[in-house]
Length: 350
Image 1 (cartoon, rainbow, N blue to C red):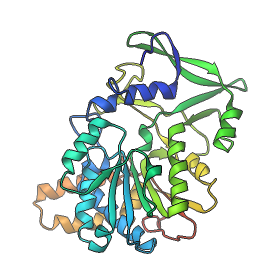
Image 2 (image 1 turned 30 degrees about the vertical axis):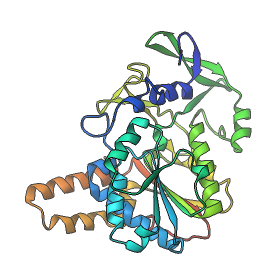
Image 3 (image 1 turned 30 degrees about the horizontal axis):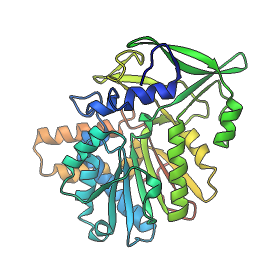
């Protein structure tokens, strides 16, 4: 993609920086773990994925224990969560044997890593979720939506401008602004995204995914569990950030070498899904969801057979997931499902 001396919208710039087939961040390196740029919950402790597996069994039962259903993970990283979920579900043979395990992955490099890590399991990698079978689907999105490209708009003297990126020369970039027709965007989205806002930050591809997912839940039943960092305010904020070697860095530097991400406004996700009359959503946070699902009790059972230092390490990792100063509050958990399904497991704590 030739970018020199061209103004391109922010979301196209992020798409290039993260997903370009040659230079894209996710296309040429594995960003997970100590050696990478960040660590996700499944790589902190396998207990996280075990808890998600238990939640899947209970949600599957709320759907009427269908004889055939899909478990589809979006952006499965290094495959660790899916691996542990499969191992755990083997303890629930009726659920395990009825399940089609599926992964939707944008990065070819990570797809190859997943296929290597999960080669002993029956998993199908799916390009287009709309061409899937008509079974009920339980979708999982753990830190998936934050990696999708976003647009940004700023209100300046009652006029909306959109953020663009200009490449003056190879590897050098700067932010630019152009006037924007927000009313046209709102017509396409089908709701007033600019209402009471000074900043708009949203991901067109996230809304495209959500629209397809919601239509599939409506048609075939199922639900989606979204786990990601974000906030719940009605007012949108500017949260765009870049991460390299576990530290914040400049978005316009080291393009293709740095992860670009943002904090999801879950209130916006809720507004978007409200368009689907038959569906409803519930939102909690990491701490409430995981403690409600019994993560501390699970850790205590495991720790009975551990040495003191192993026990300390395990509880240090659990604390990282549920401590309000770490992931406990920053990370939100959202479930979208049919209204008629009154399922609330994991979301009972106010």
